[in-house]
Image 1: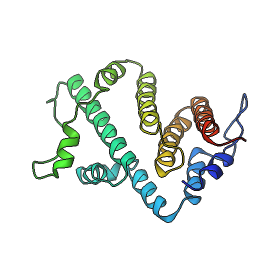
Image 2: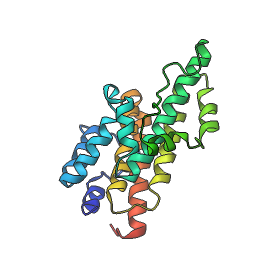
Image 3: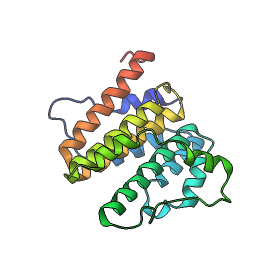
Length: 208
């Protein structure tokens, strides 16, 4: 990603007691998008559609699982697995049929989509443990921690490409959610994200 260094340089210096101030996490995402190429903006726009409830249909996930970008494919496969696991957990708690409201694909779906959803969900046991928590905030934080770790794993070897940017934006969306729920938690997660990105970048090339 040609503008990666500018994105890193645009992040604020984090200090103890730092607050978002007038800028919100959404503002930072918009600034990142403004630094990207038209092609990358289209990919980011697809990613952002995944945060709109009205977009989350079988058609969306079919497109995601066949997308040309690796991060998009693997991130939304994980997202789908998490969403379906949450539905099944809720069904069990309410005594409903196990597969009620679970998002599935018909036999006429593309083979690569069927193959993807048939793969083992490796984090299933960890997610079940998180969902079993009785405190709602603890449960939601646990789910987001799993998402954060998955994003980190997906972008381990990405430094200067669109997947690095997509990973950053997905984490920023987690930060944004907690900023709306709990500003202190949002600040802590944003600091973690800034430290991660600057640390990785410095290890590769950045000397700021």
